[in-house]
Length: 444
Image 1 (cartoon, rainbow, N blue to C red):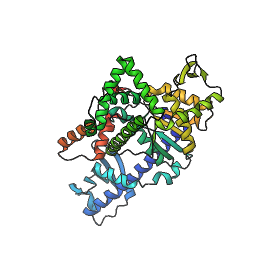
Image 2 (cartoon, rainbow, N blue to C red; image 1 turned 90 degrees about the horizontal axis):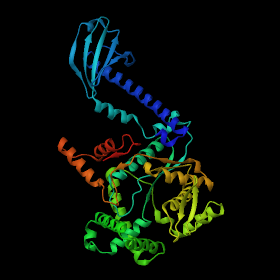
Image 3 (cartoon, one colour; image 1 turned 180 degrees about the horizontal axis):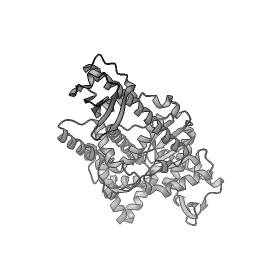
């Protein structure tokens, strides 16, 4: 995480979080002493044992914790009690020694977790002086951000989990956050899908029965054909131009597909207990808004027209196209418009993009452009990168759908435990398999 943010305030956050954990451990140790004192009093009611006199002398494996009780009354030193001390908290064994009483305790780990969570009040960290030195900021976090008409697959999971975790972490220490899901509903990919839809490979009634899966089948088939047939590809590009120009039939199909997608995503996010404050669409940054961006970049001398009619931005001596020769926009161009819009809407201090490391060059170019236009907050735009899942391609249809993974995980856990699995247990199993070594690529 430190490598992702590269900011001193995050290092401070981790250090103060560590201090907070030590504070909680100390609080739980006091709770242990009190519980042990109460247990012993059940056997020896006349013996007053101040909790602070119970000292931890060593730890053992398997949850065994040893304490030593000094200043033991004489009549108790000759008594040995085995397996007679128990409560919801622990089972204990008392053994007299020369001048003390040894107490070996086997603690119930579930009890520890439950009572530790009870110690964590909602505003523990916000009200604590441990975090008062951190300057509070407003942070926009862009995470998950799948494309329309495609099932949510495991390749989207890391961004969703990491982004949701960062949002909760930052909120815990008092920062204001905006969790933003930026849905891809624009560009050549929609043109390919729309042209495939117009081929009527799948009857409309069949599409309605399982819209996202059927639309995905159409997209995969159309993408293969677009690669093999230049005429099919040209028609697909034309369909996207129709959308940009507001063609009624194209816009109607596009709106229906968006509705299908939102319904499917909300169902999946509910299973994962992942929430967003804002849903944005790539289509919010269409031709009209892009023109203002082009005018801004041109006025600052950042764009150069190419002989083919493209508008080029030079990044590290490498030409990057921002507007095609036919006037259509690119993903980077729309990201520029989105960044300026987010700064204006949210007045944020920091902007985080939780996207896999394959997009590193894209974000380096974006951040460079935002610094060139002197957008306020441009120096605090960060790419929180993570390893992508290898061997998956939506265009080729080589994906594992998250719904299938969740269903199988639930079934396996149900078989093992012979009872239904809660969402929290299911979520934990997904995190353990996906969130480790987050900067590394891996095969699912």
